Length: 141
Image (tube, rainbow, N blue to C red):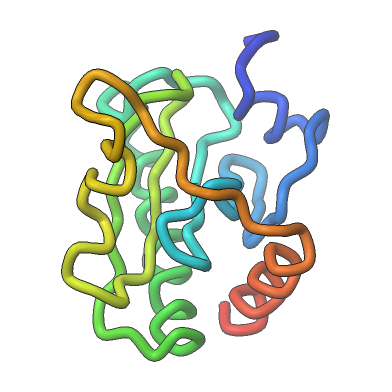
C-alpha cells in the first residue's frame, strides 16, 4: 500500500526505532507511547485487520511480543506487560506491547482526554530517549 505509514516503515522508507526485525515482521517503538518502551509489532505484508492475518504470521507476531514482554519485565521491573491490537488510526494490523507500571496503563483514558468523539495523541518522546529505550530493549532480547 503506497500510502500506508506502516508499510513505509517496514520498507525502510520512513525511520523507526527498531527493536526486532526479520523477513516477516518488524517491532519498533511507538512515537506516541502510553509508557516508555511501548512497542508496535507489525507484519511487513499489508493486512488491515488483525483477524485477517494468516495464523502463522499472527503466531510470529505473538511470539515476538512475548520476547519483548520478557525484556520489558527485566528492563522496567514490571510484573505485567500488555499485548493488544487496536488498529484505530493506522489501517495496518499492529500489536501494542506495553509495560504496565500501573493497573490502568493501557486503558483508553490516555486517548480519550478530549471526549469519546475525538482522539488525543499522547506526547511524543524525544529522539535521544527513543534511542536509549530501543537500545535497552534490544539488549534484553
